Amino acid sequence: MTSLSANRHDIAVIGGGIVGLWTAFEAARQGRSVVLLEKRHIGAGASGGLLGALMPHQATSWNAKKQFQLDGLLTLEDEITALEELTGIDTGYRRCGRLMPIRNAEKRRKSDEWAEASHDAWPYPYRWMVAEATIYSDWLSPDEMPLGTNADNLSARVDPRNLVAALRKALELSGVAIREETTVLFDDTRKPLLPDGTPVVAGHIVLSAGWETFGLVDPGFAEPTGRGVKGQAALLKPAQPVDTAQPILYDNGTYVIAHDSGLVAVGSTSEDAFDDAASVDEKLDAVIDRARHLCPALVNAEVVEKWAGIRPRASGREPLVGPLPGFANTLIAAGGFKISFAIAHLMAKAVLAQTDDANPAFLPDIFLPKNRLKSLHD
Image (spheres, rainbow, N blue to C red):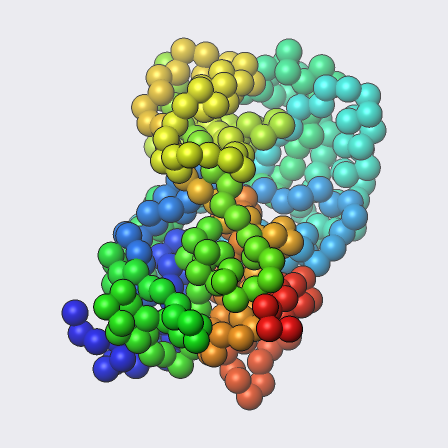
């Protein structure tokens, strides 16, 4: 392997998941020389999963995180269109909307509040709505929505693996050096190096290694920066073809998402404690059963794949984006958790905007690690 110190790049991205891929691609589009270092293979972690849900938060109690996610949802479509034109790869993106059943009077009252708030928080024509059960009875079981359903026309979905493949090809077309099976560590002075001691030398290092990011940087901070949360999901093949434009179904943590392949993704668990990151078990079976109750089209569907992976959840819940205190020329872009696919392209732009040492761009306080990470030496 050619020494990384012999070929200095402007940007070295550590991690080949959705955030690292968008960061490397955006850096290349800015005319920078880029190397991407991935411990296993591109999309090996949670970014190689099955769901691909792109859903907004409720429009009440508006805050900076919700606005950031909304900006991501609104701008992602154009980004994906450009990516598909560049690579010729269909990412399976569709603005399909979402349904969430209403089961009691209090939820119906709150639903009306969410719908009203969307008029102020979301740009026209996107709205949160309350619909009657009979409208969607062929996709969402009427028994599951006694008081109707929440609906929105902003939610979208994407095929995670197709998007990862498109981004990889975009990097190749853009001249980004991709090095898989390449582990990066940080030494006692917080400098990155390969296991053989070769230093990783670049103008700036961007750490986007999913949930493993936290283990790489935690020794430098007084409290954990985040943790991994296991999720299990499955792909089902319905007994009869389904309309692939159907809205996402979501209910108490269960997702049902029709993809252009004709397969339906269902998930997911959220497990803080686990022994095996890649194992599937009865927890997923329970989610599949729940999905079958929600969606009549899945009653006799065949399970064609089961999957498990670890998602990165930052300790403060908001993603960590910005310079890492105490790490020279090193920035972090991680912790998007369940909304990573909706905001990864904006996380990439935000973290790269911080690499202008003379005039770093402004970041909202919720994303600045220096405001949330206390060094052991403070």
